[in-house]
Image 1 (tube, rainbow, N blue to C red):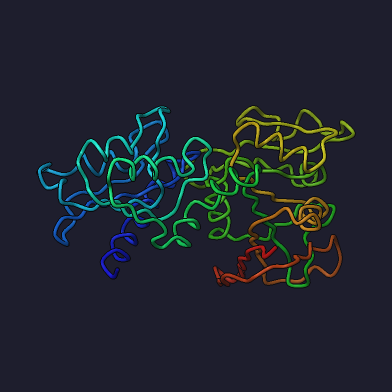
Image 2: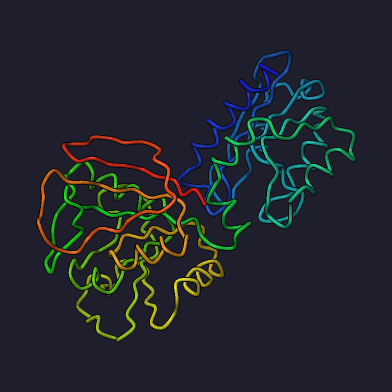
Length: 324
């Protein structure tokens, strides 16, 4: 058991290397062990490319060792033909007798079928090794397939007296925290702001201070008041404007588009709407070291659990998880 835990931790470590390239596929790591020694490992590098199990098996120099090895995989091997052949078939063909799996795959075309295929072929299969950690690794993927909506991150910046804005643009972030915001954008497939934020702040909503793809830019314009001169309409990144849709309809549309992660950056009314409906999964609040006295009050979280608190360049960043 101790060895199994150690090697599954290594799977999770490898899987994280695919954070930029794997989505919308899940991040997966695989380790092959013979006589207590790692002889092969791999991770899912890029959507559409070879899966972790393929890369791990291909990395083994002496294939004869596979017949007495264990393969550790953070997520259930696929059992269907997609952009690549089934990984369960490759494991069986390679003659690996034992498979240790972190957690089952909720995707409808897998969802236990990979496990069953391995068992039917005579493999010894163990499921649930570091299951909590493996599910956390791909929480966005799980939320998308099980709840049929994107993973939702709320983000805002505020003053010490919890004012989020006024009728003018206010800079809360410093150079360091602004870089972190752009990293966060790069890790989400879509980003949403309300009408007032689009008008007052005129944000670009790109990842210009971080290496990574620009998210799909979203805003709401129920009264057709957003001018063509806004940065959101500059054509620099894909943009979508909603007019009459409710939050639930917006999330359904994003699910239909295959969007697994949504970053909501404001304003206060829009953020509070997500909170009041219980439609959020994590939140990041940045507090600047000054007071404003008056202005738009910051949203108030409900059923939150503080995960960590950081001090960066004088600003405080608090990260929360939603506890339904």
